[in-house]
Amino acid sequence: MNQPVQKNTLYVGGLAEEVDEKILHAAFVPFGEIKDVKTPLDQATQKHRSFGFVTFLEREDAAAAMDNMDGAELFGRVLTVNYAFPERIKGGEQGWAAQPIYHDLSLS
Image 1 (cartoon, rainbow, N blue to C red):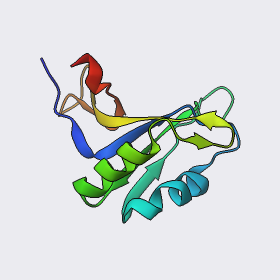
Image 2: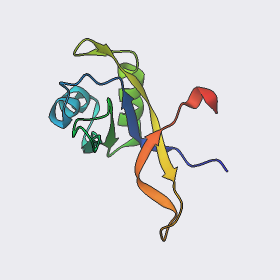
Image 3: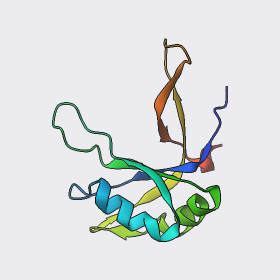
Image 4: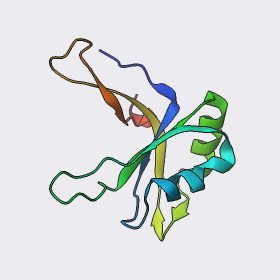
């Protein structure tokens, strides 16, 4: 089953260890108003897992950010930026995880 792409939430991969949510926000805010920024932590190390999510209020802003930031460099690392989509999990009332995950549109 194909899952719906969240066109206002972006997956941002390739983050350097130094990049936190404030830095990620600052890198993406030139493209529009941001609703949320998340960098999921590795439970064992309590460090982020080299990726994050940026949610814009407007789809057009997310599209502009993706077009401009995919392949861009941040703290010496090349970013991969794509639309995110909800992760399907077992159990739960909705059967959907609250956190979006990476979705490569080139594979669709």
